[in-house]
Length: 420
Image (cartoon, helix red, strand yellow):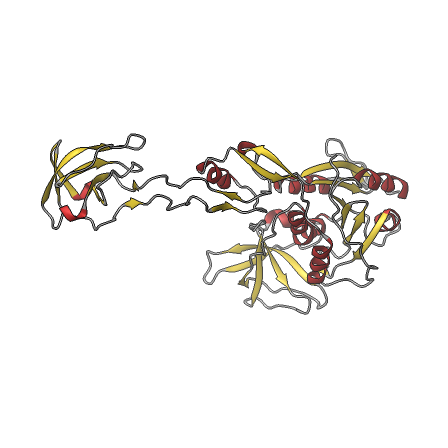
C-alpha cells in the first residue's frame, strides 16, 4: 500500500452526548486534509479519478468557423431579398473544406460541421432554397448575417480552463478532454480505504445459515459504495467480536487512508470497536443525533481516519451517505456537492419524537397533483428492503414532532450529484 499523506489534526476529547448531524459533519471536515500525491494516466484510464491539476486548452473548439446546418453559404450583402439566384462555386464538407474564395453572386454548398469558407458570413438552410440546376440555387427565404454559423472557439477558446483540479472525471468529461487533444491527465492517486464487518453472527454469503446467524451484507454494500466513488477498497473480511481480533485488523488498516467498520460500536457486551479504537488510535466523537444511525464513531487509527458505522444495515447505509461519503470525496481531493433537497407533501402521517434528525425512506410520486412523497411502510433500521424500495429520504429536523399527512416535508433524493 502506498503511504498516505498526513490527513488529520489530533482530535480533542470526544463528547459523551449524541452530537447534532451538522456539528458531526463540521468536525469531520475540520479533521480531514485531502491527499496531495498525483500521477499521470492515459485518458482512457482516467474515468472516475479526481483531477489533480487544472487542464487548460491549447486549441479552439471548434477549431474554425463551421456550419450548424446543411444548406448554402454566402455573403449576406449578396442576398438583399428573396428570389436572388446564386452560382454554386463548390462544396464544403466536414473534413473536406472548400479552399477557394467566393466572388460576388456566388455561394457554396455546405454541410453540418463543415468549415465556413472565406467570404461566407451566412448559411441558409437548404429547406429555404430551390436548386435550379447543380450550379444555380435560388434563395427563397434569406437568412440574416451570421445565421447558422458556429464561430471558432464557441465551445472552448484557446487558453480556457477546461476542467479544474478536484473535478471527478465522468464519461462526459473524458469526451471533453479528448475534444481538446488531451492524451494524458494528472490525477490524484486512488484513495485506499480498508473496511471490515464485525460480529460473531456473520457468515459468508455462499453457505447455509445456522440458527442465530445472518449473511454479511454490510461489507458488500460498503465495497459497492467505494467502487462507485472510484476508491480502492481493501476488504479485511468479517472480524470476530474479540478485542484481539479487532486490534489486529486495526493494525492492518493503519497504513490506509481510511478505515470503515460496521458493527460493534453500540453499548452491548460484545461491542468492542470503540474500546479498541481508544487503545489503537484516537476517538473524536461517538454517537450522532440521527435516526437511524446514532451509534457512529469517528476518529483516527495511525494515519487513517476511522468511521465506525452501526451494524444495522439501514443505519450503516444512512450514516455512510450522510457522513462518510462526503468525507471520502474531500479526502480524495474532490469537492463534495451540497445535497439536493426540496419539499413535497407527505402522503401519510409521520410519527416522530423530538430529539434526533430522522431519515425516513420513501418514494417520490410525481403522478399525483400535487406531487407527494410516500413513506415506506417498514422503517426499522434492520429492514434493508426499505432502502431498496425507496428513492429518497424524508428528512425531519431534530426538533420536529409528529407530521400530519398533507404537510410539506423536506425530501432528499437518493440520486444525487456527489462531486461538485
